[in-house]
Amino acid sequence: MEENRLPRSEMRPWQYAGVILWLPMHVYGLPWLLLRCLPDLTVGGLNFWSYAIGAGLLTALCLGFLRRDFDRLWERPLYILGQALKGYFLLMASEFLVSILVYAILPQANPNNEAILDLARAERGRILAITIVLAPLVEELMFRGGVFGLLRRWNRYLAYGLCMLLFALYHTWQYALTDPIFWLYLLQYLPAGFILCRSYEKTECIWTAILLHMLNNSISLLALGG
Image (cartoon, rainbow, N blue to C red; front, top):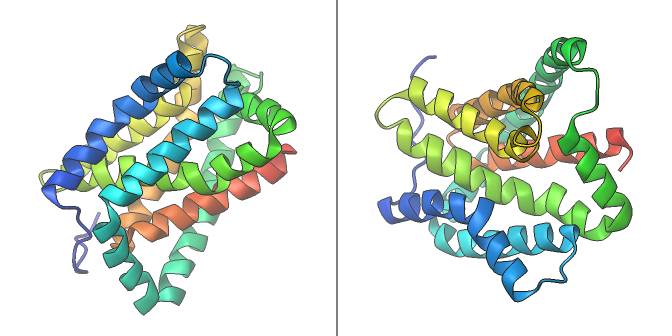
């Protein structure tokens, strides 16, 4: 991977610390707290409020970072939108190839996709908000802006590898704990992890990854029938 000569998109040290510390809070701490306070929350409601609170807190924490990178989007809108579109087509091609391999071994549907569809049927408005707006913002700030952005200061290959792995684990660990065969679904999320990192690094603008993530989630939800 060649060195990028664009000015590097970086958070402040305290923003890196806050975003990375929020990751375990988002995965476990906040859902636990919400269920303790509001035990009657539905699964859709729990996910919505977890993402909505995370989006609000991370946006406030990273406001300067988001604004600086938005200026880059404003300066080069066609380039950044073009890179997001290019990333989407690369993502579709790579996920198609990986899915052929995964489904040859494990022909049942991805449980994460099935869970999203079930929730969309029951709580469509909330799931659309999560999938299209809240999740791309929260996940890109945590994984690309935080984990990848911090680690690439020391080792880009480690940054790519760890960010891809964490992103894949984030989407599969709940199901894999119930049945170890579901660890195979990690493979389906590795291409997305790589391409999102690459899109961010190539443009040095976190909005490229956010827009790509939004586009991918929107079209995937439509394709799944949500």
